Amino acid sequence: MAFENVKNIIKSGINDAFVEVYDMTGTADHLDILIVSDQFKGKTLIAQHQMIMDLLSESLKNEIHAVKLKTMDYDKAAQRGIKTN
Image (tube, rainbow, N blue to C red; front, side):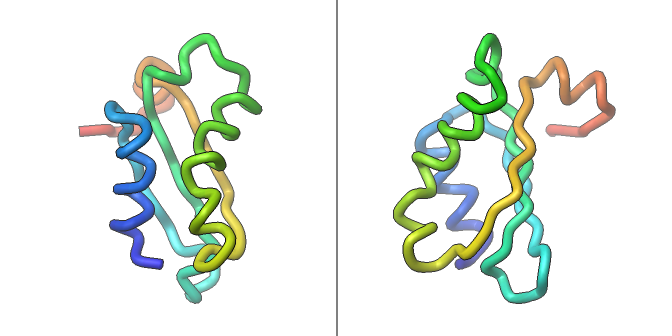
């Protein structure tokens, strides 16, 4: 699956999301995805990941074999030195 499609799917459900997608194996079906959004504030890590998995559920059936997620809000990203602009 094209990484831009993954980004668009996530951004369609989380409009303030900053998304980076990396290929873990060179096959474009094992993805490492960083998502930063203030919609994650106050949610557990499991709830954050479930939000993303719900958005990607159709793609996971056909085009994506595995995902590794890293989710956080913008404050946490800034604290970790992650540039989101």
